[in-house]
Length: 289
Image: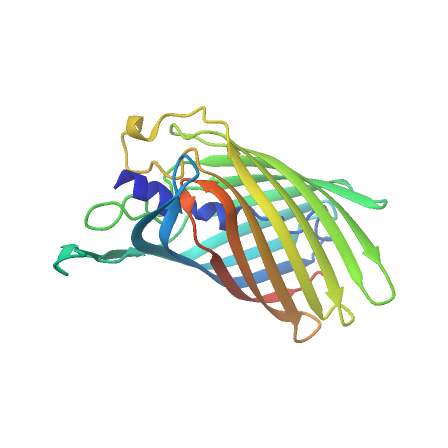
């Protein structure tokens, strides 16, 4: 059951590690805000050896607010707040008798929240560089449900220091950009620290009314924390989890500032993580223009 806790909880990596804004901080007084629904449902997972094994159908749904606000031309405040999170697992049913061996369960709560600040290190020239400090606040439920095996948070306070380098390119018919990112996630309460990385490319079509975005993101564990069996609480949450994920997103601006988006992400390799895709839909208000 502890192993299942790890697998269910580890999917938050997909949602929490993003390349929002890239190397460009928001201008003073400008902002970007998004309300989104993200979810994943899976009946299989990557083991700690990278193989795929079945598990009871489980999932998480997050309703989140994401926002960026330019405090100065170099300094941007960032928040990612899952204000409603639902984690569940289905009944475990005997394959021979059809008897319910273990009933399903679900919890609803606030989720773990990220707040951060981005600082523009290089705000002129072809390549823009910024650094972001993100604080992971353990506001979710780290041991919910009848068997205390459902989680909407990991119960630990972590800090991520990330650097982004971005470049934009304008042609007659396209607006293009690319971002490379790398970061270190310092975790507490016996969790292993992590190296995080990503590449993002985007293209703006139809006078930037439609944006197509592709991402490659990943996490590699330093495996310098406690083993799952050595952590006393049930918040042994995604410890030593690793993955490489590919994702695609389309954003359509219905007006100059208001738009809608949809995305798809899936791990192409992993350890202790769901082997199923995640999805997201959202509405956004872009006040950066």
